[in-house]
Length: 262
Image (cartoon, rainbow, N blue to C red; front, side, top):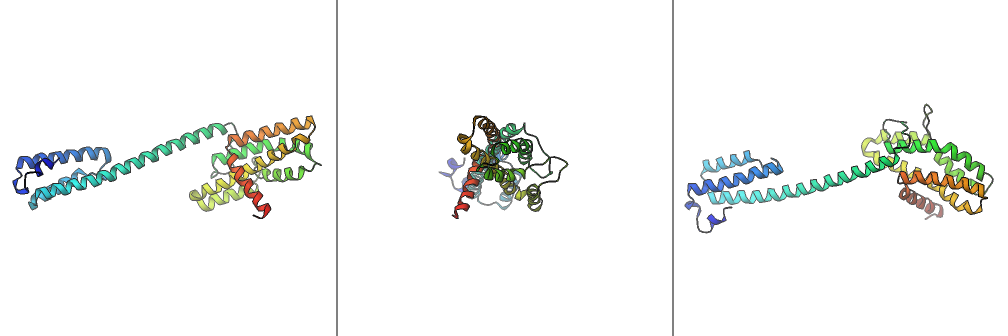
């Protein structure tokens, strides 16, 4: 902007017209920058104050303009970086909203069991899914497997799964009460950790039962195989809708390591 004047002129040689033209260009750049980035980085009112101070002090014009241009460049770099960072965050937030909306759509058909105001929608719907499913599959599994060697492990997972049942006005199970207590204790900062433990436990219970049933299928008579396969399909549907597969694999792997003493 000002380099053409600096090639052949010393500061005392600047004409009033030259100074006015350079300052006008600087002010115009500030107006555009302030419109784009805001006054946090480009406050034209402050620039006006600096220009007035320069005039009152009659300081070196060339030095003043060079300092202002260097300052403008620094602020432009910071503002551009901040703008890019904000856009990346906005894109990430938009993507997360899309994922959450897609997840909500997948689980929308499960009952929203409002067992506590602090409980998240995903956890409330897991409770709704299990509360509806449990009585049916517990009866069927007991009919097919009670007395068989697989029953002990299946019964263990059923007992774990039963902790998610809530049908108003019944009191919360100890597991649900502990989840709520964690939310009340830690508030919003602890929500993610409480939800993670909740979801992973549900994932392990549901997947643990279906894994046991798959292992036993070849040893069942046809009628019992049909019953077991139907239960597997219902369990897998919940795991798929709530996207619990990765949670289950991680949790069950940790459980296996503990059994082996690793």
